[in-house]
Image (cartoon, rainbow, N blue to C red):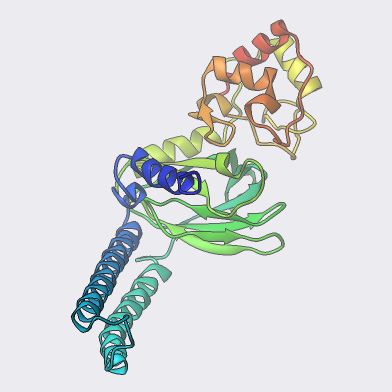
Length: 332
C-alpha cells in the first residue's frame, strides 16, 4: 500500500485544476489554437489506443483462460500470433502517418506569421526573472526596458528575440504560441500575436534551478491605440510627481548598484529596470501581486520570499522600507 501511495496521490492531484489539460483551453491567438487542436487530437488518439490495447489484452487473457479450463491444461502459446502482429502494424501505420502529416502542417503554419512583424522585442532570461527590451534601431534613445511583463498590441505579429544571461531557459505563453529555448551565447527567434485583448500567463518551461517554478511572467495584450499610449509613457522618466528626497537618496545608496530608474543617477544593469515598477501588476517574476504590503515583505525578507534569488538581502530599517515602498509605488 505504501508503494502505491505516490501513484494514488499523483492521480488525485490531477483533479486540482479546473479541467485536465486546462492550459490547452482559451487560446488568444491562431498559433495557440493550432497547438491546442494538436494537443487535444493527440490526447484523444492516445486514449483510444490505450483503450483498444487494454481491451485486446483483456480479450486475450479471457480467451486463454477459457481454453485452458476447457482443455484442463496450463495456458500455452496460441497459434496465429504473427497474424495479430500484422494486423497491429497494419492498423498503426496509417494512424502514425496521419499524426506525422498533421504535425508537419501545424509546424509549417506556426513557422511564419501572417504578415511581417512591425514590432521587435528582445527578451533575456535571468535566474529568475525576464528582461524585456522594446527595440528601436533608428532611435536608440527610444528603447524601452522593463521586466517580467510583456505588453503587445493586438492583431499584429510581434517578433521576439530570445537570449539568456546565464543558463538555458524556455519562453512559453501557452495561450499565445509555441515554446522556444533561450540559450546562452546565441539568439533564437519566434513571434507572438494576440487576437484579442487580455492578460496571458507565461512561464519558463526549461528547468533552470531552484526557482524555476517561480520564473513566470505575464503578457498584456492591448488595443493598438492603448499600446501606443503605453509605449509613450514608458519612454518617459517615471518621476512625474517628483521624488521624495529622502527616499531617492536612500534608493541611490542602497539599490543603484543593480537597478536603474531613468531620471535619477541610478543606472545599474544587473537587476531589473525599475523605472515604472509601480505600474506593474506583479512582483518577483509574477510570483506575487504588486501591492505595498508584498513589496515591503520583498524588501524585508527577499530570500524568505524567493530563496536563491540573485537579489541580496538589503539592510533596511522598517522606516526605510516604508520610505522606499511609498516612493517605488509612485513610479508609474
